[in-house]
Length: 298
Image 1 (tube, rainbow, N blue to C red):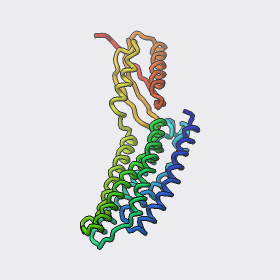
Image 2 (image 1 turned 120 degrees about the horizontal axis):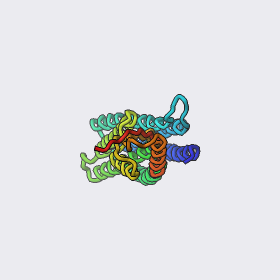
Image 3 (image 1 turned 135 degrees about the horizontal axis):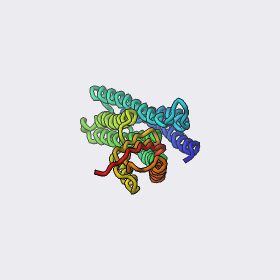
Image 4 (image 1 turned 135 degrees about the vertical axis):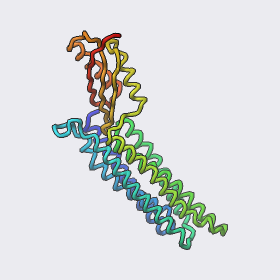
């Protein structure tokens, strides 16, 4: 896909995320504050962090889609990986803040939150489910780590909104039934929200670190690459197949053995055919480097 088209699509997703999160942030922070709900207020802080994260994605998208140059011969795709890690760090900090506020709240007298707090959490849940599905679909379609980071942000909000709604409901029930323990449902829910956000942040940071450290891609894709290479009769043995993600695309390194009497031209032509085949079958492969070794039958 043309980089300008890809950039345009990514920006569209990011802007949708920005404006939706601004609306949800205002709604949850105001209702959480006025409606006396720590869980909803914490969810609002999370949405505010999402706004910041989406803006970072917007700033990085143009860089990630720049073509390779003399200083960056493999392209700028890892910019998306970096921003994914940054979003993970933001979520991590948010989780620390939320759990701190929640724990402190457990040691203070509590009041039942307003029913409006539960409804704003439900509205947030519905909105985030739609946004998550949309963003994840676009991320998979265009192999974008930046858009995937936005999708994970929405996923964190989904579980956070569920927890907030349940916490508020328990507190309201506790107030109506005069069950003191249930009154703390909202506080406990805010801590649970922090735990969920922390897990998603850890996952995002771990994946970004793996790619930045140039870890190999998953075994299933490597197996598919090997099967495609073995479709060529002149390939006598695959000595090594390595591949690494570089943001929204993959770089592949292959070492194969062919008959020792093959000419340089024959080996070159075979390499070109293998490269073309791999790139045709996997549209996210941007480069295939093939090294030829001589094969001597036993």
